[in-house]
Length: 396
Image (cartoon, rainbow, N blue to C red; front, side):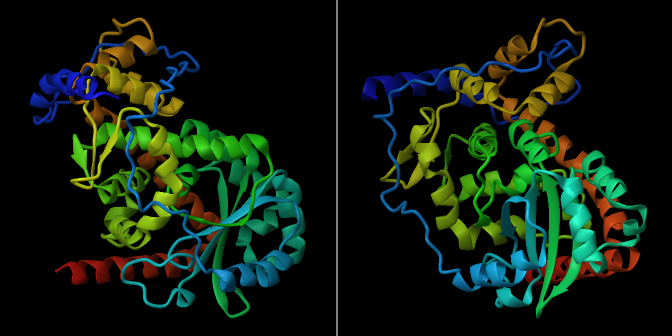
């Protein structure tokens, strides 16, 4: 992009930035839009020109030495569970270094099993690992699968399970439900976890799942850019992305480390870079300034509409609901175009994402009491509260 074009973009964004400082009132500045929402909005076709995008020189693909964890998974985890796993990944402080964690091996190891047929998988797992389940096992496989699929975030957790010398927690989610959350952000529970680095232990083979995993990362970038200022650092970008699935989560107030987002991002910037560098290279509305070592964007109605239009369906639905007062605007596309001209649209987007997380965090937490059992729930919650207390003490 020529210097004249960049100057034009800056000029277009000047009046926008001048009005971004004041936060909107949710009552007085609501847009007027209809409640009826089309099933989807076709995305804008991005320009094929990428010559103007400048990226940091130090953006290598990250290859971590996690042989011991992979060995533990292949020798201890997989043989202990049924076949039929579409893909699997580990996450959390047991899989990745986080600030304030000295010995990863002492932390509980969190796994997710993605399965094509949850009924068949739970049936076999109940035969192999019946002790992993709470009293719900007495209701049978179909009841367990119904609770998994119909309540909370569509995932069933067995927690505080001793496997060899390692304490683990594992969740089971259907391939179909995961794809839906990755594409639509219905709950932002699994899709939010996958905004952050995970250790993939079994690569997916389902083409739809592979596409959905990539689409989820693109959506995270669009949502983060709408909420970031004109100039921001690489770390601030990843903090904004990592925070998407924590904003609105009531557990961040009563049972989580208060520094959780920074603890995840700061030690793992290279891993975030390996996830998002190619997406940022292809994004025409953000530029890297190698002199200042910052990213720059020039918000105007074109760039804002571009990001808004590429957000997941549930965010669109929430935007229409939030901004719907007198039902005067005919459809979702017009709502997004109207919102693209509002300098506070990032604040509206943040509110809609927070509402998704709030709803799913409550329902999944209630569900976990059933799936884990009362005693395990108390023990698990106590550990979380202890982490929160320690983080507050360290901050003070």
